[in-house]
Structure formats: C-alpha cells, structure tokens
Amino acid sequence: MNVIVIGAQWGDEGKGKVIDFYGSQAEYIVRYQGGNNAGHTLVVNDSKIVLHMIPSGILHGDKICLIANGVVFDPSAFFKELEHLQSLKVLSAVPQEQIRISERAHLILPYHQRLDQLRENQAAKTHTNIGTTQKGIGPAYEDKASRYGIRCIDLLEPEALALQLQRVLAEKNSLFQHYFQTVAMEFEPLYQDCLQWGERLRPFMADVREILLEALKHQKPVLFEGAQGALLDLDHGTYPFVTASHTSAAAAFTGSGVGLKYPVQVVGVTKAYTTRVGLGPFPTEMEQESAELAAQIRQVGEEWGATTGRARRIGWLDLVALKYAVDMNGISSLALTKSDVLQNIDIIKICTSYRLHGNTIYHFPASASDLSQVEPVYEVMSGWGVYESSLMHTLADLPHELQNYIKFIEQFLGIPIILLSTGPGREETLIISNPFQEELAH
Image (tube, rainbow, N blue to C red; front, side, top):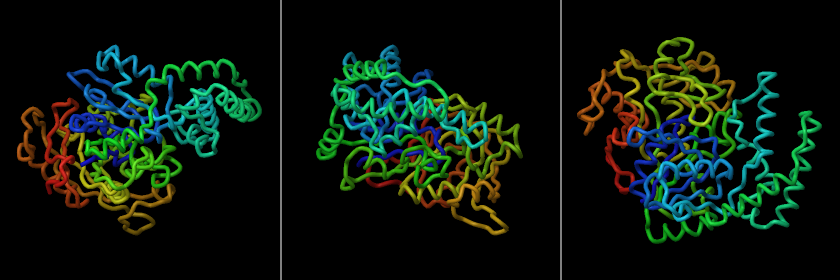
C-alpha cells in the first residue's frame, strides 16, 4: 500500500511530524507540489528541524527522497537546506544517493521573488494584497503555465538557457522598469548563477517519474508528501486567498508523473483546532471573541509560520471545512495533531454548520465573500485536563473528554482517526492503525 499525506486545513497542521513518522515505513518519499513556501517542522531528540524543499523523510537515512516535476524548485534555497542538514550530520557523505530532483521541475529564479515582493508591497497600499510568502512561488507557476518557465534540465544546456533567459528578462524588466518604476535585472550575473547551479545540481537530477514507476512496479512502499493544505488548493480552496499549486491528493499523480493504477490511502492531517496564516476568510477565528485564549493557544502551540515567522490566526475546529476537504480529496483516515495544546481549557467548541443570510448551511461556500460572512454554529464540549504523553499508549489511556472529542469528529466525518499526536516529539505519537496496511481500523 502507498500513502498520500496531505494537510486537511489551511496548512501548518503538523504534516512534517506525520510524514517523518510514516517515512520510517516507506522506501521512497515524494514531494510533488509547491515550493519553499512550505515549512515542515520536526522535533527529533529535542532538536527542532525545519524543512522547506527536501522531503521530511530525509531524517531516515535509508530512504530515497524525490522532488518531483510538480514542485517549483529554488536552487539557492535547496543548497542552504542541504548544507544545514549536512552540518547536523543527517545526510550521508554522498547526498545525491538520498535526494533526487526531477529534470522537469520548474525553477524559482530571483526575478520571480522580486516580482512577488513588488506585487505584494504595491497591493498592500490599497489593502488588496493576499499575504503570500513572497518566495516567488506564484510567479514561477505563472511562467510554467505561460511557457516562459525554465526547468532544471535547462540549466545543463547553456545556449538554449541563454536564449530563454533573455526572452524572460525582456518581459520581466519591462514590468520592473515601467510598471513598478524600479531597476532592471541584469542578464549576465543571473546567467552565470544559473550555470553554476546547473553544475551543482547535475548529480541530483534524475527522471523521477521512472524511479517512481520502477518502485511501484516492484511494490515498494511510497509516501507522497503534500505541502500547504487542502483549503489552499488553487481550484478548490478559498480563492483568491490560496497558494499557486494544487494541494489536493489528486496532485500527487500529476505532480509525480505516475498513474492511477497503484493502490493508495489518503491520510489527512488536521489539528484539534484550526489555524490560518495570512489573509482570507476564516469562519471559526476566535481573535475577536476570545483574544486571550487565542494568544494562549498560539503560545502553547508555537503557532508562528515555519517559513515566514508570521503569527498564525487561531480558531476552533471547523468540521464543515474539514468535511469539504475529506470529500474533495478522498481522505480515508485522519491524523489528529496538537490535542495537547488544548489541555486545561474548560470548554471546547467545534463548528458543525454555518449561518448565512439567516439560513443554516452545511456546505463550504465557493464565494470568499460568503465565507467571510458566515457565522459558525458550535457544539460545546467539555475540555480535558493535563495528560502525560509518555503514558498514552492506547485510546483508552486518553482523558475521557478527549476520547469523546475524537469520537465526535469520526462520527461527523465518517472516517477514522488513525494517528494521534500527543506532543511535539517523534515519540509522542499514538498509532491506532497503519495506513500502509490495506485494511484500516474503524
């Protein structure tokens, strides 16, 4: 059995820990979309490691980590991350034996980052910015769609690269100079950087699709690692407050180049509450009604963006949004994280429907305007006290109130929770069922 792990909210659900945990059972771990706007945080032996480009499974030394064609790839960010992992002695002496990068992956180049920053800064003046990470992700996907993109393999073809780079810079510099009233970007320094990146990347480049197909054909277990969350999907998320890629489970196939014939389980990761970074509608946000509680949860849960450092907005668990994500992705089971953050909160709320224009609705509206106006309808449940994570070996060991919370979520969504994170550490994890086995526990 193969497994796709995706975020079932607006990202930051704790996917890194779940992927790291399941990575021990896979032989190949694949990152298939997004860029270094994603941040997966892992705590191993009390040390925090944040990964942006390299799949989280890299912390298991005997795994093959693949960066597939659906990713937009920042060479500079990759090498910084690689050097950091080498300094921690996580990688082998020959890292290209552990990490392979698709030749077809499109590049994030300095003009993408600059364009992203200029757009956000200009839009902020009229309060129309959407809160991107300003890492150049959206502009890189734009170039990919408009056939202006430069791929990893192009770095190894100097003459063709020069022609393509000149073509792209002619357009980008027109924007920089005439629309944004700033200086042009020079061709030669960027061209030389690209050639150097190409030589450094050469040993890492591979036909990732062929590697994957060979693994799947021989029934090697594969873990597909999603970035961001389902509600940020370009087609199905809270548009326009979304990321520039497809964060849904289906993107694992297009973003890696493998077909639909291989068996797969989709595990959605959700917090016991909800967070969102940046702008956009957020029905269960508690900042206005319970600013002190929101601050407490943010502090205890360390709710600051792993990529940007921005404070995450805090809200109660939204089962309307979560049901939408479950249905849209074919999620067959859930991993529930950060239940420990809600310890010692007397009353826990959980959203089961919305009120919009005087009507009760149970669906997730397509209109960002409607979603910003809905009023959440809550079930109120008793909170749970402090528990010692090292003593939580089975569901029966959990506080009774937390057991009720888990059952309520399962019954509402119609799928089981198969993993419960009881703390930030790798060892603070309660395994209820194994998604790499075809039969799930219900």
